[in-house]
Image (cartoon, rainbow, N blue to C red; front, side):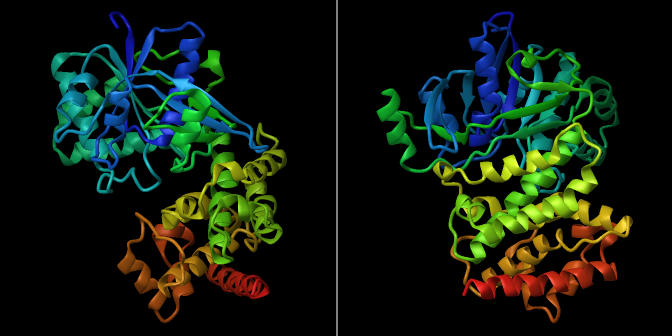
Length: 441
């Protein structure tokens, strides 16, 4: 390990192991071993994937599945050490403060960037690492977010600044602003929860009895703003797009993939589908997502360096991959946060331009129908939403006018909250959703 630079990744979830770690493995396979990757958990998990990986020397298997259900298996050994959760994170902090660590990366869910969120631990850990680096003069550090939110690097910078301001440590805040970079990035790979039968498939195909395998679609993309302060791996050698601005890639992915993914999960759940591919192959469900993207989202994204119509069609085709067995339950989680982040920007922009929002408001109308289904005890799976807990969701559904309450919520719509055009469009969309559901019996 001597002389190698290090990336410390906080969290060892399936997405990181099917995405960033795969790119690192490709770099190692290309002969570049100048960087090592270490992963550790900030939160207690069950099962503790870090301990499973530790027992396997950090190695695990990625099962990749094409839309034609062709499966391939790659052994990933890029994670040189897996560090299980420990209260106080002493070992992670020591490693993060080591001068050889030049990048601390992390994958945060849609609701995770607020300092008071369930994942506020990320700021506590980063603060502890930065404080130790400041004290030991360990040098600058890049904080690299690897998740689905637009401007994720900017959000990290803002959240960390707020957290440090609350601590009244002006010296550490000044040092952090001068010695860290927070590049924006865009990540893309559908990674469902590993099914119980995955371990047996991996064993049959590879002979490796893997206690921590992951599965993913064949598609893999990573776009990163090239703004690092302590060096970085030569990721461009293995297909990572290093760019001056990630914005057009990020917006296309969030509005055309993430928003459509949620629409299919909500609509599919309402008509009795269990898996995403069932909804994506359902002509009426797919049409809702396709119309949203083509009529309302794509016009907001132009001009773009991306062929947006082709990208939309490719995304919807990717959702049809039955071998992934990706569930509506997984994709529908954190729906209120996704509505605010993935859907509301298109609503605001089209209203500002006095353009129709008829197609885009089908998504919040589906969300409300999904919420009502849960409220009445008819949803066939568990609802999870970090942005709207169960009491708040029940109160919304039980109110005198749920759609008006939804339309007036500034946490969802920002400056468009309370716009009478939004409420009128939502009521019309709700009627269309009712007709859609009635047609399905």
